[in-house]
Every structure is written in structure tokens, then in C-alpha cells.
Length: 228
Image 1 (spheres, rainbow, N blue to C red):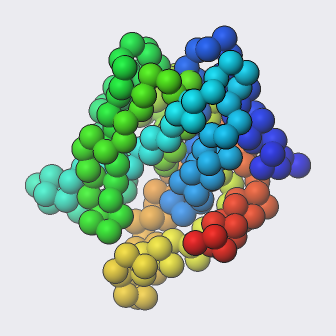
Image 2 (image 1 turned 90 degrees about the vertical axis):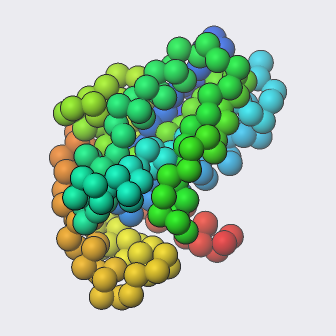
């Protein structure tokens, strides 16, 4: 079975001959994508491939920074489906990945997503030229429609987080409560809008290069909870 050490080694191996590599991590809402990506980056930073010494050799760029702002979702009448594929700037995300892939700029700035505000924040994440591995994560990396279809060809590999549905739902409800929803609203959003998105993402699983098993995702999540 794939272990966390296996994932670290596989991610490091993507960097060859000094060329920049892009690793995508995907899965449904609450599957542990960001937790795995952040943990992976933390483990990778101190151990760069041969010839690379800077801690900046690996960078983390989440897809969530390309959420449309609430004001735009209100204009579009899509606030109640926030998190669905058409509530992101997919073309902008693909354009960012293209810039990272082209590797021509001294620094590329990416947006972040502020959970406390539930809003994107532009220019928050600098990716320096020294970054030879960029880890990105999000729900729709393997979606093959519209502007999302431009994403997968820009990634060297894409991994799918296969967390068991009951644990994924538990984590989602807890997250929504943590960021301000009451228990009823958190459960309703999880089983409604989030579940529709999760079903869509699950249909892309077969396109992944590697499936990260439930056991690894639970172990990483438990470790983060203990350290937090």
C-alpha cells in the first residue's frame, strides 16, 4: 500500500534535470487535499533533490484562490452554489499554471483564499524562480470540460485523495461549523451543494496518475490535528 514516505519520494522524483515540475492533488470537498499538500511541502522543503539547496525549491499554490468573489456570485445568481465548477475563474487558474510551466518569470504571484473571510485575496503567494516543484490542489484538476480541460495537460502528475465518504462528510461539517455555520446549516450545505460537487469530482478519479488511500489521508489529518 502507498505510504506517506512513498508520496514524498514520488514527488521529489518529478524534478528532473533542473526543470520545474507541477504536481496536482485533487479529490472531493473535505477529502484532505490541502492538508496533504501542505504536509507534503513541509516534508519536502528540508530535503531538496541533488543540486538544489534553497528551501524555496518547493512551492504550494492552491486552486481556491480562484474562487469568484461573493459580489460576482451574487451578480451571477450563483452564491448558493459557491464551490461549483462555474464559481471559479478556471481560465485564470489555467493561465497561472501555464506561467508556472513556462518558467520565465523571476516571481509569479498567485491568489490565496482567506477562509475567515471566505474570499480570494490577490497577489498573496509568491512563487520564486528557485521553485522547481510546485504543488497545487483543488477539486477540479481532472475535470475535462470548459476551461478546466486546460488544467490537466499542464500538470506532470495528478493524485486523487480517496478519503472514505463518512469521514469526508464529518470533516466538512466540522469545517463549516468552524467558519461560522450553525450545525443545521453546516450539515445541509455538506449534503447539498458540497455533495453535488463531490459526485462530480468522484467521476474524474479514473484520470488520476495515483490514488492516495484513505489510511494515508487519515494519518496525515490526525497528525495535523495533534500538531494544531
